Picture 1 (spheres, rainbow, N blue to C red):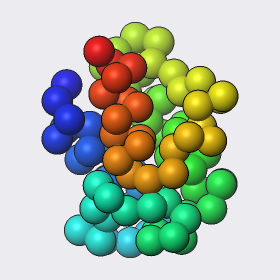
Picture 2: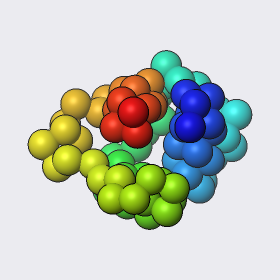
Picture 3: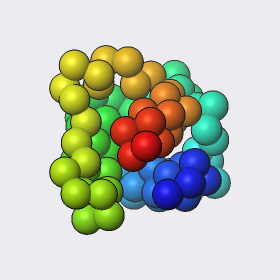
Amino acid sequence: MGRDEVFGIIRERLADILEIEPSAISEGASFADDLNADSLALIELVEALEEELGERSVGFRFDDDDLDDLRSVRDAVDYVVSRLG
């Protein structure tokens, strides 16, 4: 799965959670500052990604210790891409 596909999945899920247009989400957007996403929204995003990506890559999970490092959409894309290898 390529970086563009991962970004597309994250953008679609995040847009659903935040109830905004996907086009309003750029890879450089900060979850808190640009998108006003609170910690609950990020947990929903992580759960949605684990569910969707777990179907494609068996056992895909976010490590709880890594969640604090996810401050932007780019951080999430980088994390997922690195985990999918």
